[in-house]
View 1 (cartoon, protein in one colour):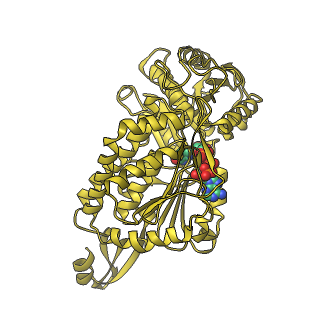
View 2: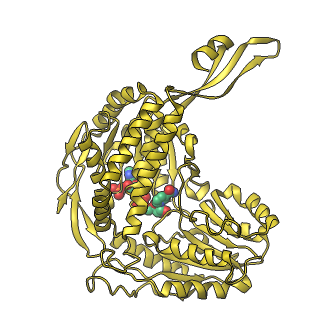
View 3: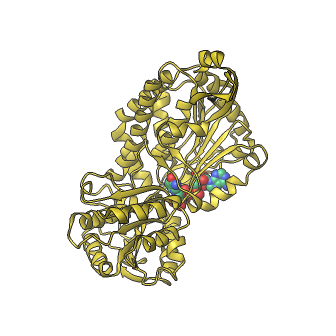
Length: 518
Ligand code: NAP
């Protein structure tokens, strides 16, 4: 068994007993333990602010980009070993593990490229300078963006220990802000191993990146007005962190990425067996089974015209019946277990609740064919397809996120307005998809649903085969969603840097402003 350490204050630290256990969810064996008791979190934050911050601010964007490139390369070189850690601690299949780890290296690499493009600058100007008086051409204003002088604290969810840690770090480091990252305790091993690779390779300047392996302790109580808290996890924890002393009394900047009831809509022009139909069935299957449905972007609700509901449930169920569930290290297994026993309990409770509003059309929350595993062990869950016949009257199917391989299929009346109204009942989504080649329908749906969604996938037959999967987050596009989804925004190319930079209005002599900052 491994005892995890936190990388803080320039070296590795072991916490004091008692330790939290990290479990292999396929076998229920304890694979690691960790504790953060005894760590001086106030000192950790000061180390970032006083050592990491000045170093990063002294670097140009091109130099910070080179740092991200070196991080990406070092992690990629150890990819095979990291995949094994993910399989042992997260119950991930090889494909799931690659999705997480390659997401991390890919995002680092993308932001490395942006840094290179920005070149020798170390601050950004937002827009052009503009005259502020009608009768004077000399008095001008422009907006300058400089790195905040604090620390970026990143608190992440258990489902993406690699991607979650490094997509956030990439953006903060490129902005010039040092990072203290806290992965979820239950799957922290992978993030620790990745940090160890980077420390051993000596790629990160002192104080620029620290990792807390375990509970946050009193870390967040020391946040101040120049600091940033970026959180990913459940809506409940998001609400607790937002109400903390830093955000409430000292204006610590906060970004929340929470859960959401993402949707897929089949347009009225889709026919059983055509390209859009096949893509939709495959998309829903992928979103349910990849990472055992434990993805914030996974499809939880499918809306289809009444006549397509039964055929869709049948086609999806047929696909799911071929799925091999079990220990992801065994050949042929395509879906692993849920991440831990608490997640399995939550899944069972959630399905029982949704069953009050929807008929169970496929699977059982208490029985699962996980033949390829140690008998009687493992947090395995069957995929579940529910059929809700009256979605306007229902509420739980639009509000209770079951974080697992669970989807509810529902009818709508075939109009874009009804489809959007039902999608929007989710109260704010990270992403929703529409499969349709009907332009009027696409436009009407997008205009109605955009305000409730951080991202919309509009897939017509011309891109059905090439479009990226519904749940894939691309670093060039914003990730986050309004309302229920947390109200946050991450990534989106250079847009993501805004979270870590202060925008200041400079007003003065045009010649001087242009010369110094333009
Ligand atoms: P969670 O229970 O809310 O935990 C998330 C993180 O918050 C963990 O690191 C946890 O640490 C920490 N935490 C919990 N209470 C805290 C407190 N009082 N102070 C400081 N830190 C605290 O969520 P989860 O179960 O890990 O993740 C699943 C949820 O995340 C799902 O609902 C999913 O939809 C959402 N999610 C959203 C996105 C997105 O991008 N929007 C991405 C992935 C997941 P410990 O582990 O040490 O308790």
